[in-house]
Length: 269
Image (cartoon, one colour):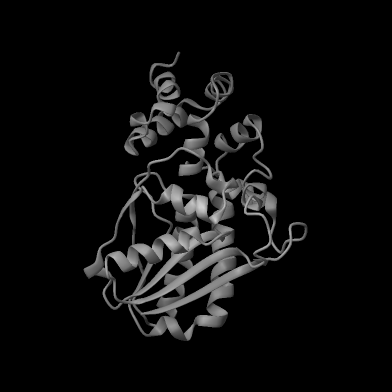
């Protein structure tokens, strides 16, 4: 087993960054055009350093684990795969394959404010599945948008070990915190930099560049009654239907904290 890692942007302080926090925030809340741009930037940086490694094996690309609702990193992964497959085509190589780590999530809390240990403990009760035989002796690229504490990478490595997956593994990030003295809460500084209230969220949800992801669905379902009503009254009908269908596809109607808002979505009052 060989494990490698690459990140495009390095975060070593909480004041100056080599990427736009504003763009990152709307990306995390569903702006897929920014996801496409981030993916192009990430691919260009990655291929400069690791082109040779891609020519030796069949490649599987994985976004962060999810059940039915894609994560923001899933869209980053989707556009990264397009860039990679174009490159592989020019090299006469087989295209990459899209993999998935299946996940049954058990919590509603936003872990952007948590430490590594708290994150690790929070996701410990989630259940995961990966196809060991499919990935045997493949190059597996696990792509995520940002590495703060490493809990995502820790979890993926734990899954790989539990399923005894044999292959070469690459962890790929758009950005990475390299100064371990920085407070992990910096993640929510980025997440909510632009999308800081219901008004900014509504504007994004109603835009042409928006697609629902796990963060947006959970955020809306977690809103207090008056905040939820404000969002409900100001997003397009087709978006309400999509939000509801995605939520129940992820079994969110089985989570008590979401049930009141889900009923309002369904019944409309």
